[in-house]
Image (cartoon, each protein chain N blue to C red):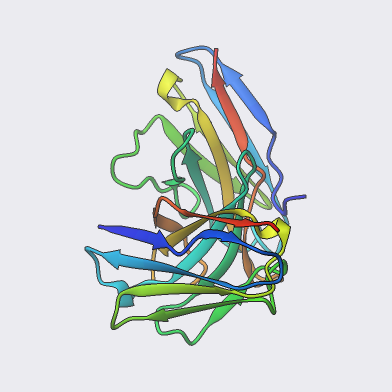
Length: 120
Length: 110
């Protein structure tokens, strides 16, 4: 049972990047999924969440209008399309599984994260 | 500035009891469940407590939590060296329509 993130890297300000998270060992389509980020040495910041069937998506104010979350239940995969990247988006991005199909429950499975650095 | 407020640090000697507070508002803690996460250095966060006071399997009963009104607390009894970590409270916020975290509390075992 795990989730594994990929797609991070170094990107210039204003450019785009797409993160992926592949799940294994559990019924992916039964759970809400989230992205949470952490600047090294700082606290956790929830970025975005999506319910089990993609009908409901939510975003932190800091990324609203720039980031887009999506999922493909046929591929057991979660995505985060990040546009208009800024320096303060630099962080380690974690994929996290919700406890249930709804967004408001706890995150009970976390990946190891993928690092995003926004710099010229 | 985090939506949920935690003390930045807490400490105790082995065997002691340490408590961490988490203060919020009606739209988050006052209405929804509180969850707690533990993060040891260099690792991903792990769920420690969910739905105010429930422990996932494998979490020792030395960890307990409670909620009252718009505040919550986490207690670690019989403190052990391996409990040195950062602890975060979290909840869903109905006004923001977002999950919110506390700023984290670093627990040091003296």
